[in-house]
Amino acid sequence: MGHADTLLAMGGAFVAAAFFARIGRRIGLPTIPLFILAGILLGPNIPGFVLLEDPHDLEMLSALGLVMLLFYLGLEFHMDDLKTGGRKMAVAGASYVALNFGAGLAFGFALGWGTSEALLLAGVLGFSSSAIVTKVLVDMGRMGNRETKPILGITVVEDIFLAVYLAALQPVISGADDLVSGAVQMGKAFGFLMLLAVAARWGLKVIGRLIDTRDNELLVISFVGAAVLVAGIAEVFGVVDAIGAFMVGLMLGNTTSGDRIRELVHPLRDAFGAIFFFAFGLSIDPGDLPVVLWPVLVAVLVTVVMNVFSGLVAARIYGFGASPAANVATTLVARGEFALILATMAAVAGLDERLSPFIAGYVLIMAVLGPLAAGRSHWLARMLPGGRPADGEHGEHSEHNGHSEHSGHDEHGGHSEHGGHSGHSGHDGHSGHSGHSETGKHGGHTADGEKGTDGEDGAPAGDGGRKLPESTVR
Image 1: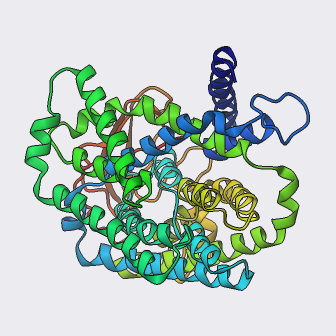
Image 2: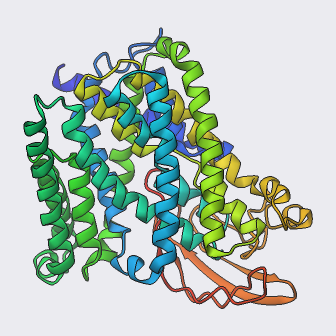
């Protein structure tokens, strides 16, 4: 493809992603499935206008998008989360991962597509989408709810397990010739991860001094270079490149420059992340979807049932009532970027050809179903012991004003696309004030100075002030 054709294809991809994202904003859907849909419609497998004949023409941009996505997730991982979350966060997160990953593994073996495929499907069904989960929390005004911190804690545990899982999966699906070579590959991968973990635990002061600069231009060049370089080294050692970028984000996010990096990376994350999802759509042939329709529908059912069950288990660990328990169970339903990472790995490793259309169909359904389920969590709350129908029907779960049980927002002062907002929340005769500020839908979201919003039992939910992660690609 010539220089002009390359520029036309790249520009067309960005414009198409932006167009479909605008549609998603208007109808209240997350943009991840719409980016994928844009790629499908403009790809070589649909009659009509074809933007790109060969999806590999966007391969490098797509790889950079994946690196930026995981780098940002690493930036949002705070070491203090593990310390302050304590035993409850570890138990709730571990139980959630074990139940969903186990169900995914059983489903994979039941399909009979192969052992490597089953191990990969366990991850597809087992991990929530951090991008969609965080966006749901922001859009529905639930960042101040007492169940939100456990939800984010579960995603932290998922991220930790994901890094280990991908390091172990890579040599298995790449087809190591024998047990010894497989063990050597796995040893190299874990050794590299341990080296990065040691640097993250004890080398932050040195790393902080190396990356620190007052010049934003130099800071951007430095952190992009570090993320891409370590991602490449990770590939050499048999670790998925995105996990190398995640570890770099984890380290840099805990330095004195972390807050500035989080702000500066937003445009890169959003732009190249959109191309990652768009490029995945280009590789999907809609004609293959009917072949995997029934497996996809069964997988959706398994995911919803197990996710609700494991979410209720996590809520029980924290002692939540019906409404916050329903919020936990439904908010974590969405699946997205992690499943697509696994789809990319499957294609590179030459696994069963049905995996790509299966994962595409599954992600499209789950990415749409997740926000819809979260917005109707009061339906589940009414069915739970102690559920009060009035709680779900008078304001806090309203689809139109985004109120939540613990943090209401005035209907005329709710989320705006570019501005901050304020709202008052009260429950059971107690009132509190929760002030939120956001830099826009693509900016950071902080919860500053929350004043003891009352929970179901009238006890203060606690003080805010912790920087809260924003969704990755929206």
